[in-house]
Image 1: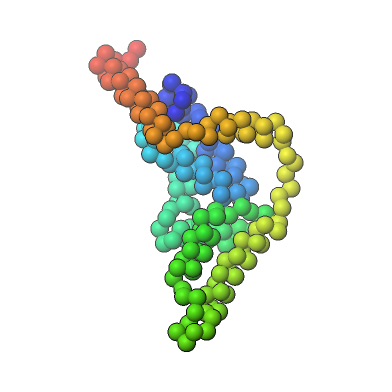
Image 2: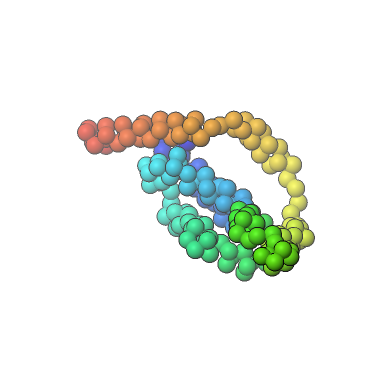
Amino acid sequence: IGKRCKKKRARVIKKFIKVCDQLFTLRNFQSLYAIYGALYSSAIIRLKKAWHYVPTKHLAKFEEFKVIFATKRNMANLRKLHRETYPPMIPYTGIFLQDLLSIEEGNSKKKKDGSVNFARLLRLSTVIDSILLYQKTQYKINPDKKLQTLIKIELQLNQNLSEEYIWKMSDKVHKQDQKKSNFIQMFGAK
């Protein structure tokens, strides 16, 4: 959003779609979902003029991520991907948290006769075991200290950005794009 020119904003969008693609290759669905969610946020997705300059192949890749993270049928596409993907993998934890909450709230701790509801405990155990499976298998990636430092600095610089502030920035560049577009329509491009 911080770039003044819509073409530069498009390059940033493209860069983050490429990062998403790399995260997909690494099977890091948690980080992939975080970046996808940021790109799909109303503050970014509304910048149609910038999205217009994103190359078609990257837009197609973004559409693939939309299908993966579709919320239809309890995120069925992502659940299937989790089941079919081999470790090492970092799953999207929102699914596990949703499942744990559903089991916890949807099943009583005791049966009507007062005995322990072991079916509920077994379901909880199954979800927890699947989480632990992914923690057992490590990635074989060498740490990049420079990249880690850069990410830490960026996180510190941007840790206090509020949704309201991001929306105001989006609104500002959206209006600038509209003014430029209206000017070009009135006087023609040369």
